[in-house]
Length: 225
Length: 305
Image (cartoon, rainbow over all chains, first blue to last red; front, side):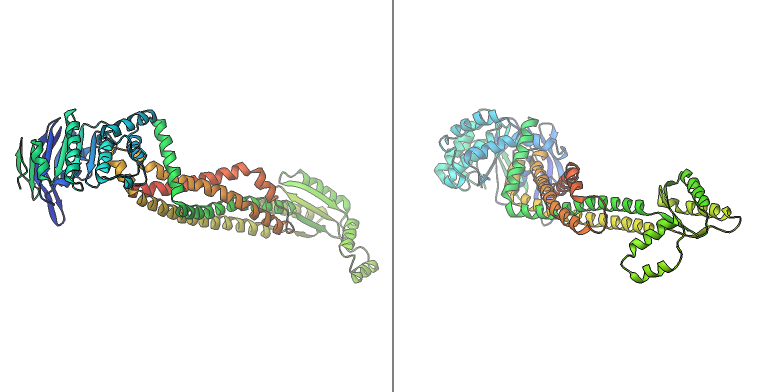
């Protein structure tokens, strides 16, 4: 599904990625671990076509992401859901509106929005917080809304960047349970994290980055840094 | 889906316009001034044109004849002139008519009237010739000279031919250069208002950067992200066109009041009302085009996909 072919990213004063190659199959749950500045976020941004590699290619299925036209990129992004450490919710919109906004931008009909948004909020356990604004919710609840927003368009791939960075351990494991369920129904997940406990408890594939290079890629790996 | 998207883009544009309050007001103001000038130039152009036509119509060639010129010769010249295609109209005024007209225009000046009483009628008859176009004055002039000179077996019956060709030329030049100046002013103002709207929309894009980043992440198309900003620019143009149209009315009233006594021209107030639709269309199109260009430029530059 995702294929990095000898990808390097060089900034004027640093090297974010160096000759990185790997493949992610459909349905996989891959954790990418590494110290801050190891290149994890750059890697995710490349999948979202937010950053272009200095050399090498990134493929999503058979599409060379960085050769995709301006028209193709939005279509590509609709197949990818993303969750971030800082939630990236719009503060002036309610939980319902935040998710509806995503569906509107993706061109879904008003009917679909009305039926799907309450349903997905139920799925993440926030069926009663439809009308709440982000500032009225706890960190865990906000992250659930951002997950609901990421999966509302039924993406093939979910990109999750440090999802538990701002959450306490109990909430973190609750959030991870949601991701496991999403993966079980067939969605591929690429997760970056610093949380050793989470990675170890998953028992899934772990790619370890150090100074922009892959130093380990284990099928049922552990957090080893 | 297209219809739903258009509806959403329009709605978002309207919401943005309202949300940006004072900043929107400033771009509307800048555009209103530009559109007002465009409207004023259009009205002014029409006014000057009609005034020019008026002046041209009032202008004629005046041929005064010698006192002893025989009426028959003058009338025969009149007949010949009437047949010329360049001539619109010829009117004859006899020696007596001229005297009466002179007395009438100087009736308050006793000295002149008294001295007139003491002499015989000093005025010759006169032909007033209106040309189809003042450009034909030269041709008519030489025609009169050739005819008038030949009538009396060598001695001319014509005393003087006068016309104000220079006035028409000057007026033409004045109108042409005022048009050029007006166009230059309108273009400069249009550019300035494009910059003003560009800045407004850039600010709007800056305040919406979070929304834009979320839109991009969820795969919103370029049209969906940039469209609302263009709608916002066009709404500013639309509001400005209404405001400038309203502002033109008192301006038109004022100009009418000032010029009514100088010369005829068209009645600017009735011209404004009779061409209301056309003026609105000109202002509306100019406003929407300016708004669109400025916001298109800003969105292209700052709202990247």
